[in-house]
Image (cartoon, rainbow, N blue to C red; front, side, top):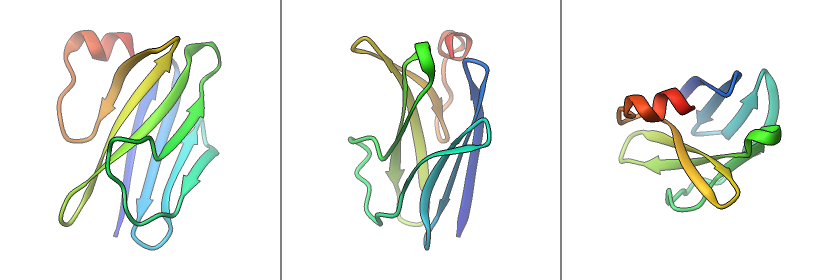
Length: 99
């Protein structure tokens, strides 16, 4: 099963592609930045990450369910971590505006 997530962060187009057979891949503005082919994810440790210049580091935490995988994405800068995307819960308007 293939699942894609696409969103924007700080004027960058972010795409995450997850498949059961080829793992997860992180694209920033169409360029492959990171990939992981492990089958288990706990959601507490970033599975994928990419530097977004002076904006910080984008970290992708997968949340595994019984039949699907969802994604939480954070932007980390100077020990500050801000959620910028979630595939399964709605972010507040403040969180959406600052992403």
